[in-house]
Image (tube, rainbow, N blue to C red; front, side, top):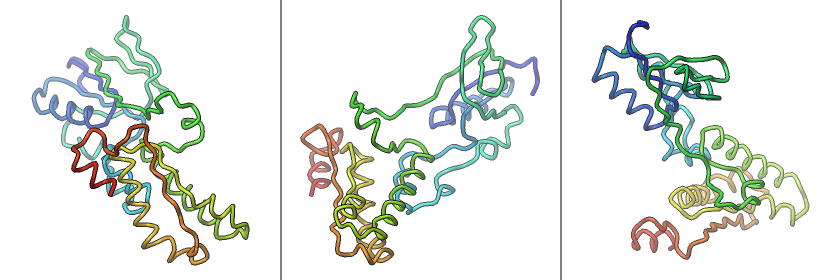
Length: 223
């Protein structure tokens, strides 16, 4: 990387960070772009629910940053987490070192919103990242393994009872995928649980599912 070029540091490799990096690199070869992310890959969040339910592998929805930008000689990637911004020195402090910048762009995205409900935050499994999705998938499988071992009927029902908090697109999607698993996978692979109901509860604070979408979509999802 040429030191006399303007150095633009972008924190966050989601949709915004990727698109901005690509746009800047295409428009101006006289700059350096450094992308910082805690993971070394970009992933496609709209399909993360399929990873969480085992229908897709992680590699199907993720792609390494270094490979994605490999043709740009003025691009560099730094795997790390932002800890501090030192404005006076044009410096970002990461968990594994420091980076100078001439321009700094923050594109870190969002976090799970629990709407102030601490009980949900404390007791639920979020589904925001690939790590979240894998934890969710493994937890569901572990619960079913435990349910298939125990002879306590009440415990079996508890272990196979699933509650989803949030009736937006993600909640509806994962409820549908879990229903598909229930019909086509779980009871075939866990015959000892075949007589259990495997209830899936979808809970939302609003009177309709998919509240940001059309009434037709809401009615169809509820049906």
